Image 1 (cartoon, rainbow, N blue to C red):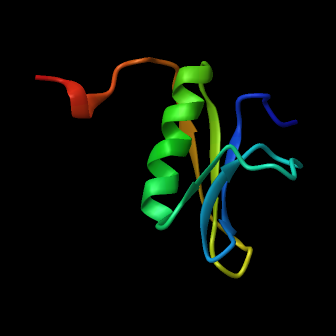
Image 2 (cartoon, one colour; image 1 turned 90 degrees about the vertical axis):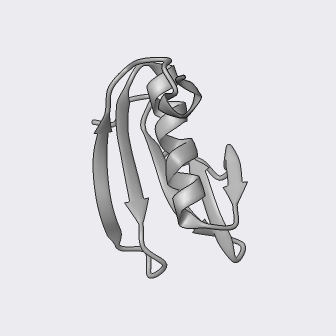
Length: 78
């Protein structure tokens, strides 16, 4: 059963997007998969934690990550 916080990184219009499962609209679009993964993790973390599923260009599941809740951004530390 999917969690409301779960997100998918999917191929989209020649780039990559972050979307909820079974949603036609995407919440963010990016040129690279890495950028989409970073944003997807941030969205899931800020929503309280959940799963991030990353698809390959062929539509197969490439990886699944459990993302914990939290609001700390390690890039802004310092």
